Image (cartoon, rainbow, N blue to C red; front, top):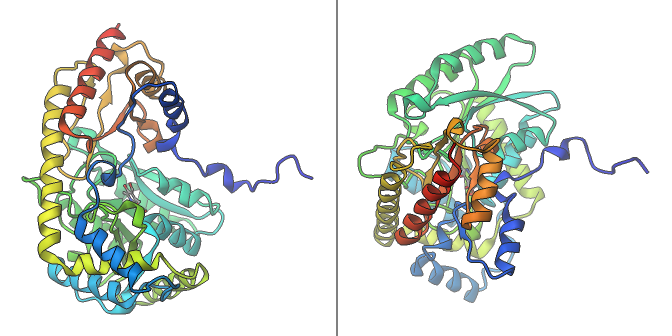
Length: 408
Ligand SMILES: Cc1ncc(COP(=O)(O)O)c(C=O)c1O
């Protein structure tokens, strides 16, 4: 037997978001009441709307319990086609939509399909934690551009242009550029202008653009969301989305990949991802029918998503005000998703790094957050703004008191 039976690449498979879960569980077992601000799961605090639960129950009752069409049941595929026609005036055909078990599975399929050992893919920091894992678990490497905190976490375009130029010069170019809009962990809704430039860069360097738009409906009052599909026509690109956030149905595990173009690269990807779907048989069948029905029920969806977004916005506004009283942290106000990503002013605190900060905060104040280094942004921490306002406000007051106590 070798010293370790595990593959080399498996060492990258790790979740920074869940790394304090065992410690938090231990605290709970000892009777402590931990506030969980670490999980981007709306259904934890806002139950999945009743009309979606009813649709799921109905799917079960009517015997939708078999494996289903591997790339997604046609009802859901058609609902997605219709969603994009209505929201973004995009004309998709059924083959352009592939249903996966969440965007998480889509990321695994895409990277497995595109990445050979040694290949590179380009992501931007701070990134969603799964992106580097999904690249590295297939032996790939990731290059990281940046979202610029000093520019409200907008894309740092000059740096991105340089990386693309340098990266494409070698024998093996960069496989794809992946952006997240609205963003996790920063909550930024990217301005249309920045997206136009990114699309221009991807076009110029002939690189596949992937846009993870899973928060596309969670956008606050003042901001306007633009989908890459409104700008990228004529070049190969993918959009990732799903039911987890906008339909408040994380546990249903429904996501999808859109490959709207008909060029050779897009067609190759579509066909190969469909193969991956066939190999894993099918996504959750009753859940697909439930989400198909929810997507078709525009009135109920509009009402419930509006309520959810308004509630989140109120929580975020109040949290930002209270955080403003803390001189040891500084946060850019998010305008979408449900995250707040403050910078920790380490020079003012007696902590070695963000990991120590987050661990001590959990231990002393029973508030569970996630260290920024897990998102490629050391000296930050991420809070999920989904808890009710009073709980969130109380947590921020505890964070403020904690910082006071530990300040130099
Ligand atoms: C940016 C981003 N992409 C993908 C996911 C995973 O989504 P799913 O539940 O569809 O797997 C998340 C979950 O938090 C996310 O924040």
